[in-house]
Length: 279
Image 1: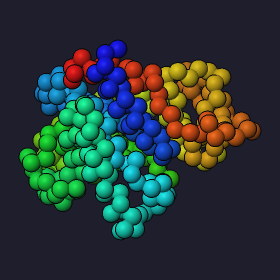
Image 2: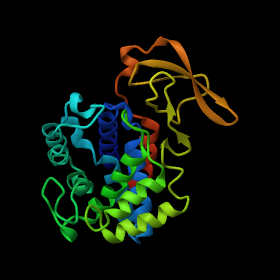
Image 3: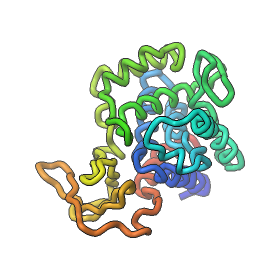
Image 4: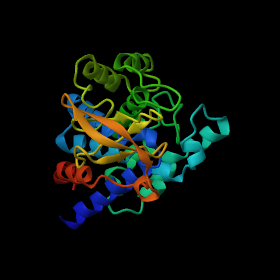
């Protein structure tokens, strides 16, 4: 692997470690990257621009490394002061990414994915076309995944419900043209294999104890132990009628098993797919 590819790999790895802090966001970065890729493709972007959107979708939440756990994992509605802290994460991500030799590949998505066409976004309050195209793409993908993902205080929305909200906010929170194109994707079946999955062909599983998402990776095999990073439970991975399920075990996971870790196989696949187009 070239030095440039190793640098790219380091960005994917750092992003996954940040994501792993919150058990309810398992697979979020992969899903946002794939929604961003599909939206870029149907929007007629070049292969390089599409790969940059996929990369930006994976790296967009880097700045959440600077958000305290007490806020990041808050199970209910945030207080205004807490939301102000959440709103700092794009700027934190920009500062974190800037010294990296490959910062130019993703900094627009990291810094701008919460900007809105009507100027009510953050951190800069940019309007319309002043928001980089890649940030407008990732904004839709990020919001859609947030709505269709399970949270401690609510189950994930059906695709149709999430799209009704996005459609209602076209031109205000979301880019009009991109929003309509994403609605076209959602009207078919092109998003179903991504929603509530952690990577291709692998759906999220629910902990039998606390119902939090449990992430299964491509390296897991039937009989392996998987852990719930929310409640600390361990479960055995089994397959029934072709589908994975988890059977709860009596033992609780130890500190090492619960520590954040990057999925090296997924990262390798992402680097292999994007590096030839962006480096």
